[in-house]
Length: 429
RNA sequence: GACCCCAUCGUCUAGCCCGGUCUAGGACAUCGCCCUUUCACGGCGACGACGCCGGUUCAAAUCCGGCUGGGGUCGCCA
Image 1 (tube, helix red, strand yellow):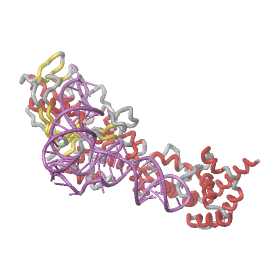
Image 2: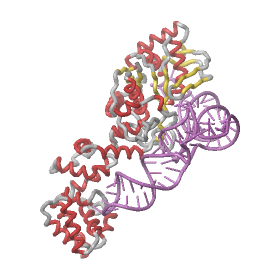
Image 3: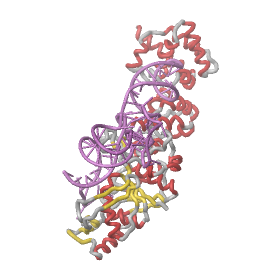
Image 4: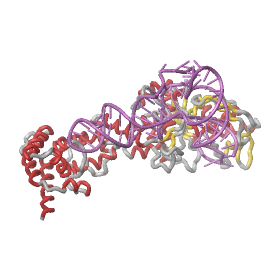
């Protein structure tokens, strides 16, 4: 049975790269019917924080993954010390400057990487490696080897940045008398410019992306596409579908640059495909406190959401774009004012009258009235449409005007149109 | 600098393992057209890549070598 693990260190929030490593481990385990282990590498007591730990666990779950076993290195210090003692007794390690060093002889090391094939190290920069630090805490490479061996991890999938750790670790496996697992080094996720994904590039944590209005399905979908392809020109794919066809052999070797544009596209695509109930519910998590006036009914809210659904890229966009549906007190801005340069009071007054006569206030009837009015006044539809949109929404573009009118309702529509006429009156005085 | 990894459109990729089906396919982005009351969605189209040099071969994006370029690691961090 295949046993893989994701081993985050709770010294920061779960970032994009970590999430992708976690994802590929998860996919590999689920595809093969193996086990997915989570190991918290909290040996750095100084930098490890409970806050980070909680967030990492939360993010993994939020992304839709679950683990079969979880371990904490901070609870296993005795174990590491025991093995260190054993190595000392066997003459494979020694104490020096208050620390314990593992010593190894120069030796050619071969890694048979599942993704890269054979990797050969002809020499190593050092002949010793700290395994117990002078403050008595165990060092990374040592814990990693002991845990992977004891947890019976037989496939180690990790970032390419760990390739250079691998020969040291193999030497430790051998020194400890453990069986060496198979390794697979995943390509790195690079910044949009191609360099290292770091602070320079705005948001790196999953948490931040969630806060920015990205859906977990979109993030996970996008991450999957970085270094792996489901084939058949498929781009939108769920975690569940992916787990059925994932194969470690199909993973690329090349680093992949992170593209916000593509993530945005995928996110929009998922938003568009959501059902009303789900979108309505989740969208509320992204509204500022006390954003919705008390008079707003669920039915009205849903209708509003429905006209914005196909033009929403991130859930956080909604609060701003929907504003005119809940508030009357918007101003015509500089850009929209240009559309109101011509005083069309007479024409808009006709329109007000016509709309006032609509009994069944639905978009078909409303459109009908618009066409009729335009025809009577011998003007193009656009002459009426554009100023009306500005009067009703404050913006020069947005959802279809007739459905917007239907949703706003006769009362709001007429009062906002009258306000426009007043505005023109004010200018002319 | 040493060691290691990588190399197809601007970006993510398909194809490469098993050479001919590739005048290299798809997606994002960009641009244009259509739909249309605007934006968006959708549809159609354009732009756009096998890094370079050698070798093997009747034939190379595909195999081999070198070069160049990019990336990673060189912590008593993980």
